[in-house]
Image (cartoon, rainbow, N blue to C red; front, side, top):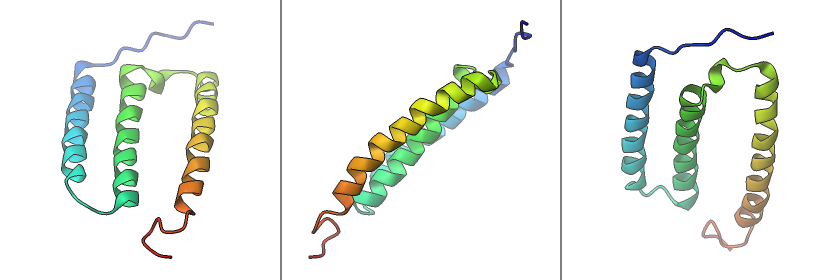
Amino acid sequence: MHEKEHIVKPPVYIGVAVALWILTFVTVWAAGIDLGKVMNTIIALSIASVKASLVALFFMHLKYESKLLWFMITIPLFLLAILLALPLVDVLTRAGYFGGM
């Protein structure tokens, strides 16, 4: 069972490229604003996640792949979330990180 090849039109690629440029400028702009360590990190990681998602979905054609491949992609993302969350919990619960104690 072969799936029909999906052809993406050039305006889609141009739109994604423009979105990536805009998000890059937003990243640089947000880096110049001091919102504290935690908020700056959250904002930077959020923008980077959106940019990575755009690249994976459109330039790597994951948007048009089968459900099985999507399931296989979610497993490493879930493990990555665990690997990021465990040290984050440790750092955020240390005394004095938020200026108190």
